[in-house]
Image (cartoon, rainbow, N blue to C red; front, side, top):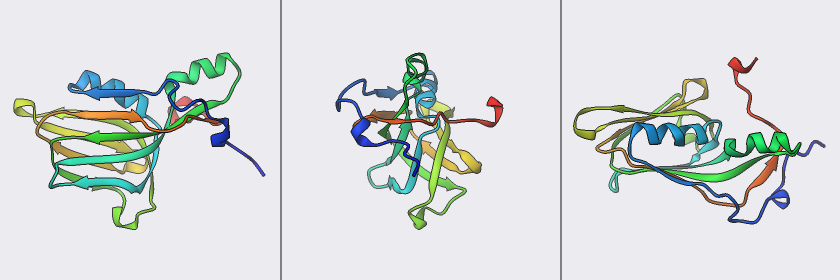
Length: 162
């Protein structure tokens, strides 16, 4: 049996946890880079129109640690992370049926298409053309690592890496 990772391999719970807020496109580009290759399930998405909140939970690849892992010849790391978007007026889902609950998605990028007076669209693009299109009245996106970090042997690969 091949074993990739276990929580027993994890570090102390608060070691190097990331917690960020994006209020402009430049901030969001940093958050997007850290969320690239995060893997989630549609059952861990919440769109709360009455509270104007969109949130999801994913297993985030720790890109900020990848170079150190390679230099030290050790495994890479993943961590459970939450993404929380405030002031969401509308949320549209592309490429999968959220009602199925167990569909997986992989985040490729998160961008902001600015409209007038700070309004706009937060676009979360996922593999296979899937994604989330969020109409927002102001850019307010937060990302926070939530749990213990665990080790993985697998570095995410992209078609343009070949």
